Length: 187
Image 1 (cartoon, rainbow, N blue to C red):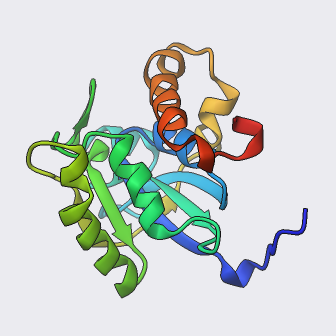
Image 2 (cartoon, rainbow, N blue to C red):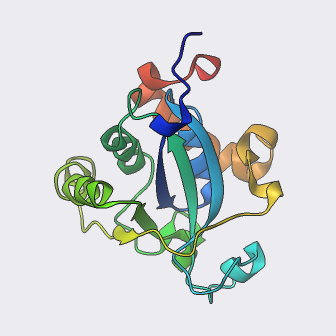
């Protein structure tokens, strides 16, 4: 393996698309993604707990913070997967997961990501979804990693009910559409 694993070349994307277990499971399967950390972003409480976030009063979104190599997978390509694997037309909801913590959001790390996100929301999302795109695009703010038991969740708990019935269908849909972008171990 002669990959250039130069950490300076890596970038970070932070995406909210419903339950972070789903988002993590999808993005960690893509070539060029080095790590995915489930966490909380863009709320007003410092280092909230899962229980606090689920209470709906911290203002946080459940997010996946994705470290990726843009020479292998671009931010635009990450956003194409993002639009395809969740419903950005349902405000504060994905399926049966309801609440502001499940909102659709792109939390940009620089002006370039902001511009790409806005263009993608206008040009790519409407080719996939009919309806009003509710995805917010905001600067990353007050991010913290979720508790350890939330990390690598689907890979460690794949037979658990939520994983089997909610996450696995999303992963299968992603594999069907983006199969050529999958890491070898997930093909």
